[in-house]
Length: 204
Image 1: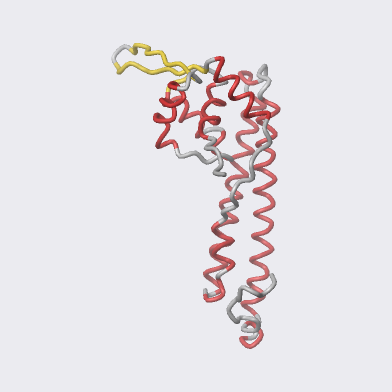
Image 2: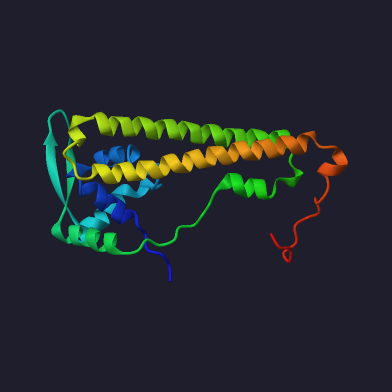
């Protein structure tokens, strides 16, 4: 059975916060759930159109002086029910696609300095992400606008996951770089041991 496309629930979740235009949805998504839920919003408007046809959202045309009229979308009661039903389900397992690990698995033929550079780049990426998460957390905690919102504890939990994941990945990068440098310093004969191609019957 094919997995259900969850884009509609991401959009319904955003609209549960307030009525928004397509531009507002994209902007808020970029600043919030995009840190852990990667959506292709190139098809945002087709999905909004489908949600409207299904009665999950309604659309209102609002005049904007000096600019084109805006379409503002509001979640209907049917949409709220659909979102609530989805929230009660157990989440499906997601495909695990981490390109640095895929490259590392097949990296035997690469020069070690190239592999070290790749892992260093991955470490820098996650250190930057950690700094971003900490900045977002400070903003949420210090902003008076958010203090009366019941969503805040749950937002902070998702940020905590990102922080833990980035710290763990950065630590893995440091450990991996250390092992790669040990391989770099090893005598050539020692470094070449165990380099036969991986066979399907081999145990990992």
